[in-house]
Length: 482
Ligand SMILES: *[C@@H]1O[C@H](CO)[C@@H](O)[C@H](O)[C@H]1NC(C)=O
Ligand SMILES: *[C@@H]1O[C@H](CO)[C@@H](O)[C@H](O)[C@H]1NC(C)=O
Ligand SMILES: *[C@@H]1O[C@H](CO)[C@@H](O)[C@H](O)[C@H]1NC(C)=O
Ligand SMILES: *[C@@H]1O[C@H](CO)[C@@H](O)[C@H](O)[C@H]1NC(C)=O
Image 1 (cartoon, rainbow, N blue to C red):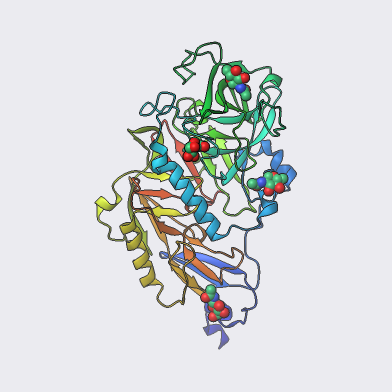
Image 2: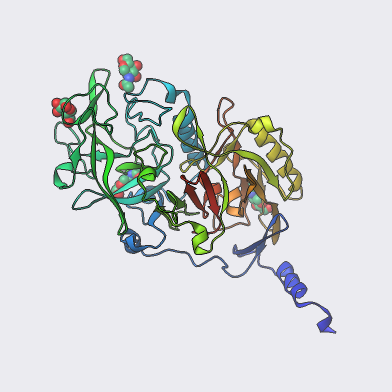
């Protein structure tokens, strides 16, 4: 009798035997520590949140905050998508390497900063060359922010790992009057105020006079002036910060992308995070990074606590680094794979773990990465291996399969915060539209000299809301938020 066959089994059989090999759609689910991906003849993806680009730019009404765009978003005013459609893995590794080097490399510990340096959470802008340029090419994600009165809008990066100040390209851009669009025009803002030397807002000790300016000279050539000012910052119709201090970069400073500046979300007392309106129902800020250039995320300053809107967040303790007071630090205490914990000796994980916005992959100490990689390979022996892609050395070829399974990677953070990564957060698909192709574990070994225990990249954070409850001393994760 036909009714003896449970309909779900029938459904599975149909799925498994159907010759859908020509189509690349998939449906996926997670069960018992495994991600399952099934070939499907229909496009099961969520309807893409591709608001028209005009709604992104005028997206100041978004309830979740200001829209966040990837630099390769077709809607990004930076225009990078015109010259490059997809991220190549070589490009991503190059950017990651420069980013890791600029954050943690020896370069970063060179000349003493002109301002008070850490541990007070000081400013170190600029210690050499172009502070925007040193963060190469530069930011994966941007928002549109308004400065001054009337508002002048610019596409700016945002970062939790800044040198401790919001930076903005300002006029004059060159002594010789070269054109410099886009740049903030201080003289056109009625709310702008100079920061006098000697003020607590002026980090330059050597300066004197009514404006906190430092001329940056390299090899006897004036690179440009850095002037601290305060003005109104407008992010959304409800997020306005008055007398917000930032550094105007005049002349010579040229970001290597088309952005105009960096919003500082560090722990520095002048950062946007520190200036967020505080109330018992809000946190300093939260963000959700879009999982692909075609989707839109959000940045919310003074974001509502997720629990108040019925969302469950997984929290871990927020720490600070005594040597760099601007840094947010969490602690990775273990890794889970397919459910059980990997056996990793605790000293291998000792030290700071950083959540970085502008590093793509997740970097672990070599011995920790080796434990993850070796165990992952044991789970995956049934699938054909594919050649390494850059430094991603654990790759598989799912071409021609109808179904495959991948053990879930869990980031185990201090305090019982187990963050299960989704398929797209833990694997890198060079062809993101076709999961039945090549996929690599999106983790790599950190440089052997790295002091940090781990740098959790943006891929692992994508599509979840990361909540910085700074006054509550914790960082939270809410899955599937953008
Ligand atoms: C900057 O914008 C221009 C024009 O929109 C574009 O052609 C160029 O590729 C962009 N540069 C970068 C580095 O993205
Ligand atoms: C930089 O500042 C110095 C002294 O404040 C000033 O004389 C000079 O004109 C400024 N240069 C530029 C390019 O703004
Ligand atoms: C300064 O000059 C030296 C020697 O001419 C050169 O090696 C160095 O790269 C220059 N530095 C910068 C930042 O241009
Ligand atoms: C993946 O497998 C397919 C079919 O077996 C093959 O045609 C293709 O060349 C493989 N790709 C790589 C990168 O190994």
